[in-house]
Structures are given as structure tokens and as C-alpha cells.
Amino acid sequence: MKKILETIKTWLSKLSFRTGVIVLLCCIPFYILSFAQMALPLSVETKGVLWIVLFGLAKTFQYSGITILGVEGVRRFKRIFKRRKNKEQEEDASL
Image (cartoon, rainbow, N blue to C red; front, side, top):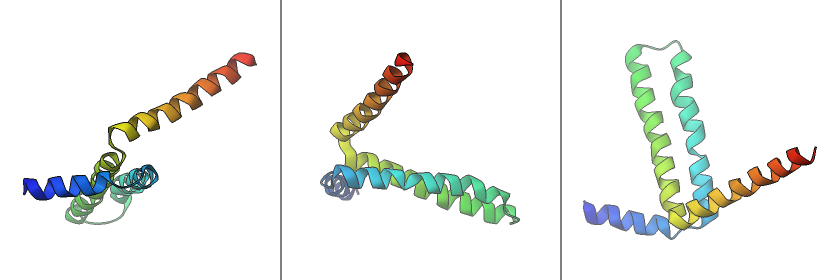
């Protein structure tokens, strides 16, 4: 089992940064759906099963995206947001 997981991790880490970001963003709709389905008029058992499946898919996309991005991809992602934050702060200071 450990060898299979290591093979999957190696395969995922070969994918591009852009693919990692897309996969990571796919977790957002599943998080929303996992909690929004609670408002539907369904039985408690059905809601529980839906929550487990949707929340599981959200976590799967999240961890797969992070694995694809890898350590360097996560650093790159943080730098992008840091630049945007600094740029916004500079614009606010100039007003």
C-alpha cells in the first residue's frame, strides 16, 4: 500500500503549477456543496452520506492540489498573494 501511495505522489508532483492551482480551486465547490446540502429537505441518513462524500471529495482535491504544487509551488503561490497585498497597501497609502 505504501508503494502505491508513493507512486501516486510521484505522479502528481510531475504535474504543472497551473494544474495544481486548478485542482486546488476545485475543492471550493465541494466544500460549499457539503454544507449547503444540509438545507435540502432530505433524511438525516441521506444528508450524512452526502456530507461524507462531498467533504471527502473536497479534501481529496485539496490534498491532491497541494501535492501537485509541492513545496516550491506553495511558496510561489504565497509570493503571488504577498505581492498583491503589498500593492494594495501601497495604493491605500497613496490615497
